Image 1 (spheres, helix red, strand yellow):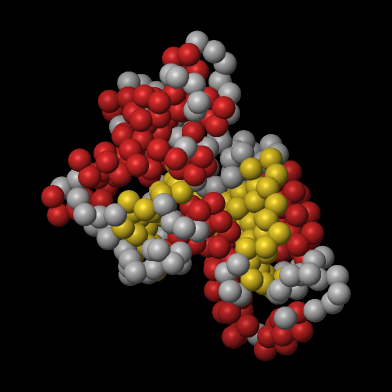
Image 2: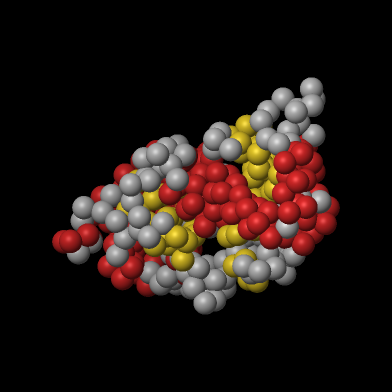
Length: 319
């Protein structure tokens, strides 16, 4: 390791969100170093430019072997391009994430849906490892889900397993979703929806949720959103039957009471055999998406090394 490199070798992990991008180095022990968070710029090209610059910064300080990226939307499992996405990130659909980053950085790149990356990170958290079948739910700028069955990610033939944002919750009353349709879970329980409901109740402008959550009007609205999510998950778990639910995302980590209300609503609504299914906030916390992205990159890198002895020598030189 050169004198300029102050951290161990590892994976550059990226978490692209609707409001922020996080980049860090994850070493082989699963420790996160040099985490940097920046605002998400508009447009696919601008996002990839920011990601490439941040990863290049990590590479200047550590021996980076590969890059793992968690990105919003339906990600093509082969090309790493964005097949579809809501308007949370305008201009994101069609962005060739894997191709552009690999060309710019000269490193192997693995790309997956951001919530799936978070689910892998959560599943490897010390307080979750005992569970083999997990439904992970992320609540932030949007809502996403991922299903782990027998410790393996389930993607499905159309790569959309776990896309719970568009489950119908008709009792909400014709609320528009980011996809253009109505009465979807994301339109009620995601961060922007909660903030908009608080603003409407308070008669003021829509501000970031962390600023609105302290208003007196916020508590019942946050509780209602969390309750809708918990009840919806009770129905979903009756269909997929898991032994744990894990929660993450900016709303979960930013509003301490949110997860507790989700848990109570789930247990009240669930079928009797499912009421003991734990609803957990993993100890990995906000680093779960980065840890999962690093795990994905290691899987891709291992396969490439097995197929290419020359690459194995190059990676050994970087360690």
